[in-house]
Length: 99
Image 1 (cartoon, rainbow, N blue to C red):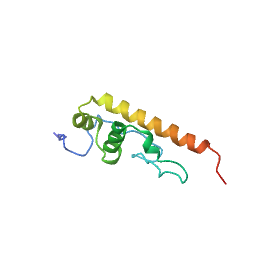
Image 2: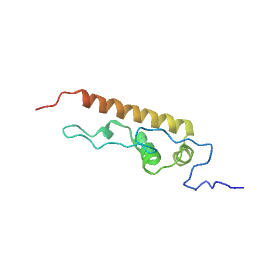
Image 3: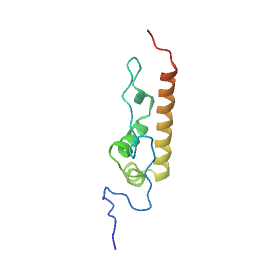
Image 4: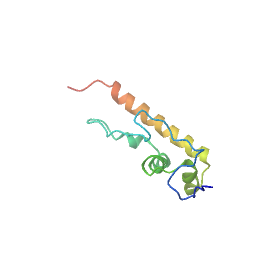
């Protein structure tokens, strides 16, 4: 019988990875010239959750333990952060180019 260790970076069979149009990992684009940093629109907690989930590849359960949150709260925080980034980047796309 295979056992998944808690500190194992692999995912257990029951866990899901968020789907993105860029493959298994979320790709956060570089800020466009002439726009402010879109990450500045996020709260410190949202930044921390995104870093741990996306960059470090931790599960929601692992992040929840580290930040003393429920896994659901981690997922909600991540979702709200991504929605904020989407809205920010869409607003930047909708502005006419200066030139």
